[in-house]
Image (cartoon, rainbow, N blue to C red; front, side, top):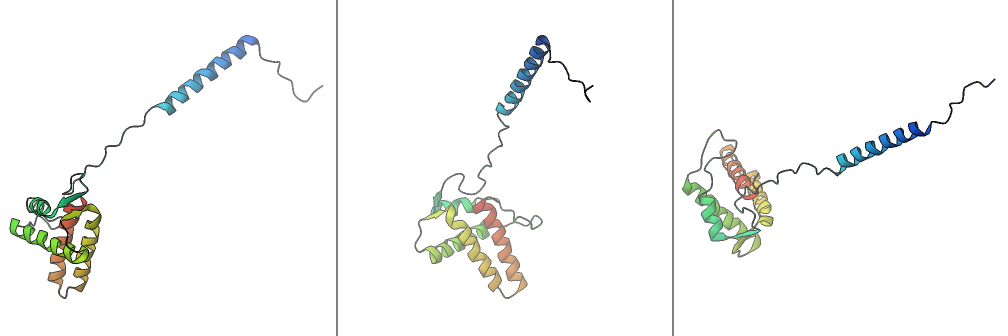
Length: 147
């Protein structure tokens, strides 16, 4: 007497039923895999560039002057149009000093310009100067990098 009973080979109809079930199961899983994943919305370019690689300096100055006056993280403080124009001119000076005579401002140069402002912040003597430069950096990050 064997220790366990051998199960008889499945009948033909039962085997077909299992094969059909397996076939349907595989089709469903394949369909699930083939479904197109939900498309993530591409992040819109919220910087001054709006999808362009570079801007002429005059256009940059004009767009920066017309940009949002609010300073990020400053509790509703704003820069007047004159202050934004002064900041745009300061960016032009930094770009000219760092890259030579520039007619265009490219996206690739923006982070380097912001780093120059950060260096200037570290060189500042008083807390008020550091705060002023920090606010300028935040505005530049929002407008140039779109962050």
